[in-house]
Image (cartoon, rainbow, N blue to C red; front, side, top):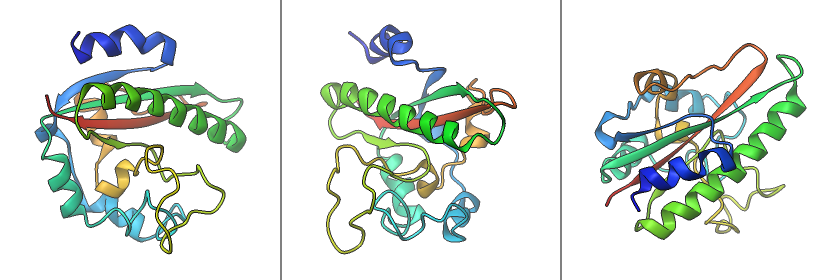
Length: 180
């Protein structure tokens, strides 16, 4: 079975909102995105194996990604009680990471060493081991798309995926780079 058929078959069960298969060369990289990481706008810079500087330079990330031929980009979308429902955002993010783990399992069975990127930084452990010790859960820790400099805001509409699904919702993205 082709991976496209597998994902189509599990889309509803996993609650994947939208997805697209694209060529890796079509991914949009931007130093500007990585600059937001370096300005520590999310307060995760230097605190996690999933974020810079642990993820390496943007050039290294781009080179890694472009070493693959294909990408699955997918979203989950969650309606919130109100626009700034922080608890709702967190719950939606935890649910998105669970979906990403399940999709990652599929790709790890089908392909050799896919790169799995997800949203923001890792929150599996209350306190990350970075930088003193190795990651406790390397199979569950997915670097942030932003840490690789991927401009999801521009990429999503170019492949037919909505970046924003309404004022009282949150949309999270993950990407899996793979080669056949």
